[in-house]
Image 1: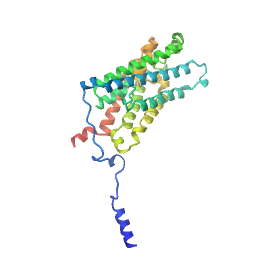
Image 2: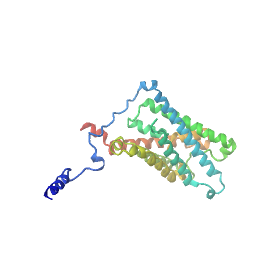
Image 3: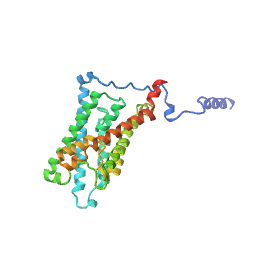
Image 4: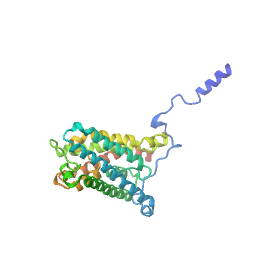
Length: 287
């Protein structure tokens, strides 16, 4: 019995009494901070994977606009909202599509599907300026094509009558309110993207990369629930531009700047907050 008691005592003392948990449990042995992406990387232009990623962003944004704008059209078309999926259904369409598309494209392009997300990741030096610009162009083209297909299905007259899914500041709200809603909404989205795809968490918890699309899609869903009554919810400049170009009425262009300035400010704030406050990366490099 004395031998067994000694084994138990040794086993209990094998590890320190206070085990670090969470982020503090990370050590240099299992994680190294990835180096920042170069601002310009000309070698990417000769790589097929670069163009494949751009095509993935185009197709993903095309499908995103097709499903979401068509859902919006269905709700607006109905004479009674009780007979449609309503605001909740629109929010689920946006959030659900982001969840599915991020899951499908994360391993190819990173699953941005949004120039604001790309901009935030660029500020954090997660990708090169070359790739960021290419992604934004492909996202915008995909959005225009997606909204165009919806217009082709519905017909020009009906599409125009129903508003084309274009974003605008709702009556009763000021431009400042709309801008604020877009800034905060995009901050929520991009901050979630940073947290869900954090390389340090991925190194520590193997399930994080697999589950990353879920919180990102859920964040989009929640932001839409909150801001659809204010701006129709942009938080994605490509989505707003694609619908505005195909709809092409003054109503869509009057407040359009809000849906670029707001998301880019929100994305920048999220990048700064995550990199400087949450991860404290500049301070780590000095130590």
